[in-house]
Image (cartoon, rainbow, N blue to C red):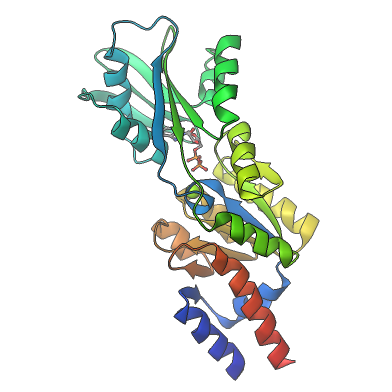
Length: 291
Ligand code: ADP
Ligand code: MG
């Protein structure tokens, strides 16, 4: 049977908006050695804003590229595409053969032109990157911005930089974990340079970027070998495999996707990252009462 102090621990966690799906997670949280944190929507607000939009590579008639980009972006729910669509004050056109490219961007045919709207990785794969483009992206990424490119068959036509901000509690939450002897690691599908810049701001030394969902899962496995009991914190569909692999998965309850909330062992109702350290502290207190 479940000890009384575990029951009261679960109840006291629930009162603070920490929903723990079973006594064993409360009992083992005290042993967490490392926490993996998703970047977008977990450490950051997850509501990036378009901060720069410019033509590239001698793009054609002024503004046409804006409409093409908006047409593609408006078809996607990804936060980066949403930021681009919201930031461009032009009318979108119809898109044919629309397709999402996991971890890369989107593609489609607009006004008879086959286009992609996506990240540096996608442009490199299409062999459309140039030294000038690489340098331009590096400058944005070093400031923690995420750059998306619009390209047709001839090359890159426009560049869109979006910026997301850390949640107000992220720096404090990471510092609390460090004080408790828990190592924080950032995992993200965003590019490594942007990941490093945002991690530095959050006080995280170890940031891994360019990860597809299965890579996030692999990163959890590595952390388990290296550190021991490892937790994962995420909000997205792309975090679900890693949440399942982690010893304890924490999902953001308010902004999190259904699949993240269902897969997680602990749901943080108000998305406050400080709740991770609180859960560990509560687990340590509960254990001290029991033994
Ligand atoms: P994350 O949510 O951690 O950023 P994703 O795998 O969703 O990871 O995306 C990785 C990167 O791929 C994004 O940072 C973005 O640059 C690009 N990307 C993926 N999907 C889209 C999309 N629909 N629109 C624009 N960019 C996208
Ligand atoms: Mg996310």
